[in-house]
Length: 234
Image (cartoon, rainbow, N blue to C red; front, side, top):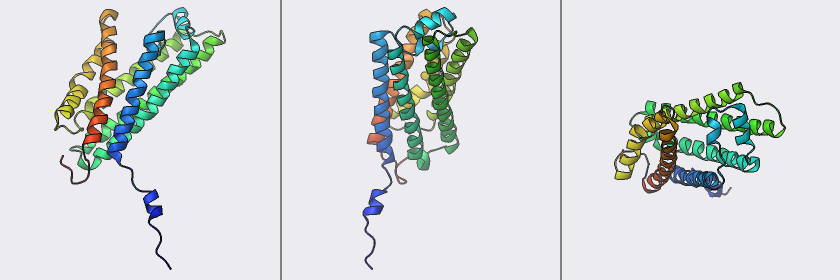
């Protein structure tokens, strides 16, 4: 009997995890830009819905342009899939060479939880949009719940990224800059957004957006250039 062909084993060959991480990060960065572009040109997005407003103000935001708002939420759902997959594949790429697997596992667990909370938040947005379109009442309690969901989501992600800053490679200039940003930039900026008046908080929100975009681009570049094989340098 002839030996089985290698074609089947080649079909199920292990993916290049660092390259996949790079591509997922780049795709996520593109979606971030698309969402920002929609908000910039239409003034419609989820951000205003993450804060406390009166029910009348909240409904006005929901009904400003429901199709565009739903598009923004849909893009954000795609973003959640991309960044959650990216962090999972990133963790698999780093697992063998991680200096502390406990820190890496903790960071990935928190970021996975953040992705779940992000998805739940978007499902709530879609529910609220439908409620407003049907002329049904949106209570202050629902608005408070939405703001609470957003607060928890962001703060869980801040902690996850902070810990990831101690588990990522930290040799090249770009790697050092990314780790520094994970540890000492995104955390204080994120915390201050909710502790400062709007005049300060709005620029900080833009800073957070810039951090998210640039960190995704940096991850894409790092994982495209670096080899993470078992014999790769730590």
